[in-house]
Image 1 (spheres, one colour):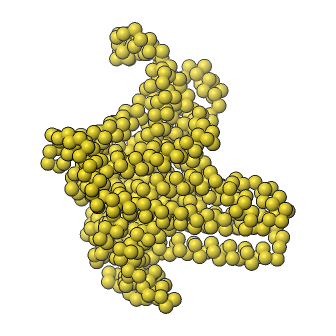
Image 2: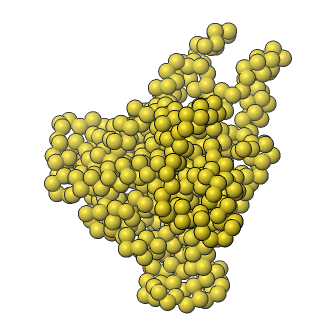
Image 3: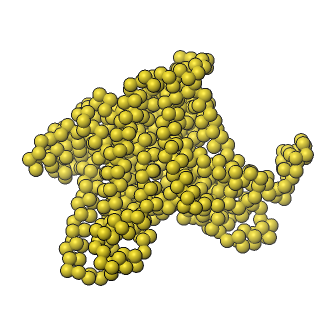
Length: 283
Length: 314
């Protein structure tokens, strides 16, 4: 903390806080609005003037969510797809990262550059054929259709490769001298040593899968296969802003979608910010 | 690797000599086995789709001729030249990008500059600013649809408190896109702010102190010292911002559905409609390749810039 040098330092500091508090309010009020609307009885959500805090708490919207709409099923689908995607990414990416960082084989660096080059391909360009391939495999409306295309990520491989390269070569050599196979070294030495990097990848994979809209939109055609995000999008008055909707119930749904993400964020904030700044530094 | 399974033994004791030598080296074998799952995934779900997409763009592939799409040469690309809806969508994407990227960068830089003044509680502010970043686009969209409601939304209420007329934010073609930009900036400011802050914290304090001794005021030292030293950060946010803006989809899909009267129909949304609502997948693939070409220009600029900074990946 820099010591105040000038007479204007204190007013400047107050102004700084004022700006930050104003920005914070604009960031937080929409979320307060979401929660409070979800607790209002239907029909009272558009009272004038708008009420930021509800006068009474009405949890019936949440009940309706799980009784009138199969939101429990959506929740289960999302949890299942996310769990398998995260587990798959951790396994596939860490194996590849180990291969690229610690093993020598013909063409390794060329293949790795190819991997990195694919990061330049936007998802939209492969979307249509990817859909056709998944369709050809008969995976429309299946869990594998939602999971398998997401179980590897070049970003994840890159992230873990950086971490694995930081492990001293001595550890590796010592384990080899003890007669450990590469698989044993990988699972017993490298994975336990790189908990933070693996957690970062898990958090990213979780956030990305839990909040994905486009892919479930194409694959989950039946109502019982929908994810939370997709259920919420359909729920939102069949997509546009120009129709009347049951807003308290939509907001209750939004709260249910957001809650797990917020919880993970609060507990894993450090890893998340780390990953973000890594992506920034690499630019 | 003590015992060798039968299949593996068969693999490296039969076939041509180079094959045998290749498999005979256990280190090589193990290396390939480790990257095999990801390589298979990359080939099946990325490289094959990429080539397939290029092929599709030269065919008349529709829902009705799924397995016998005729090859029609460059007809899709020729049709695109006269497709007014496509050019409207490209124009909308450009408009969105030109509004959202600079405004978002300026606003988030301003917040980062304030936060960099070593204020207490920076972590709490950062946590709160990051809430929109981690939120799902659909949740954010439904919240903002109600906030921007012309009759009962909070935004118009605030305007009326100041005696200003209400705005039909999402219903008016003139304000629909700026409204989407507003939501985008609200959602992305926390992310950009963290990147700016990292850049600001990398600037040595001595530089500013030396400038202050030489009589530079805060305004001068910002333009002459801070901003030039933030060039890598600026460049990163600019290019990734442009690439991201050209790919916008979820917010448009949920909030406006491309309306009103096509005013927010952006490129990816148009591709989506063509491919998955008209099932005109050949033409949609051609559109996707044009968009890819535009995005790729910016990607190349970034790659070349990274090279010049000698940020080697090895």
